[in-house]
Image 1 (spheres, rainbow, N blue to C red):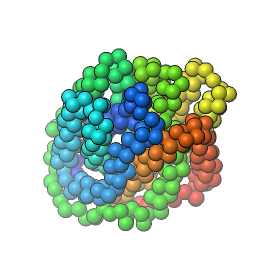
Image 2 (image 1 turned 30 degrees about the horizontal axis):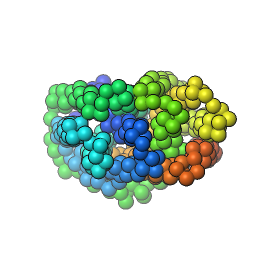
Image 3 (image 1 turned 45 degrees about the vertical axis):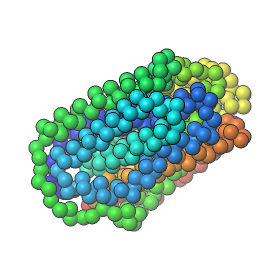
Length: 412
């Protein structure tokens, strides 16, 4: 790490991470959870909703500009780094205001362009923040950084998903979006204030220039990419179509909003709390393997429900809640391992490779799942998710439970 960089103490660093990751999730869950529910209520087919996920392509390809952002972060002081984040967040707010005032929900092309730009700006913030977290968090506190990330994700889901869906059902699209914008403005304040109070540091040329080739040459990165693919295929497939599935099973927008907020986001935060406590006693790979096994059981429940063998609104809601808790716990464990695999001279690039892989899986699985459901129904969709989770569980049990089998991050 560049020695000219200002090193933050733990409390302000975690505050910045919580603030930035919550905003990222507000925007992300608006796209990945809120919009699919609203679009389905407008009569849009699951295959078309799946195609809408192409607007998230910047997240899948952000590894292409990660080396440039990482090099800029390495040679810039914290002040310049913070200003970049604040500028990107301000641009996100402007775009959301434009979508609200233009009634973009009735103009699919405009909505697609707006979401695409939101995703592009979010990747810049995310690359910078992830590199900062990996560099500045001591190894024994990395789980706290991932708690901020996943916890922020579920706070974002509470408002960007649940509250947005509910407000759209009760009021109108633009009212819901203006409330979301107000929350983003509020969440932007901690980062702005902390950056202003931090002492500026001198800019120095980086001694090491990050690159994708360097990332791929590391065994820990290649192993991490494989693990992300295996662990996230089933999860991302189910998450992409869970709102349309619930809507098709009789839940209205207001019901979906309350369920996403209370049953998904709040219980997800409970899962984050559980994982934070467990991480003090259990290794992250043990938690990941356990979560994959539980996830396979939950997806089996959805599969049985789709076959009408396990029916009932209450049972479906319980499955959704359990899925949110396990997913939150699993994300904390997986992202802690990703930090270990990414630690080194170009942490921002290596970690971005993992996240790009994760989002690529989300996009591909949304496209596949939307088409599978349209052609063969929800039961086949959930059967694929069960198979993917069982495969990930078996591979994780084989590789991660044997210490020497998992590549170790290189020391620097």
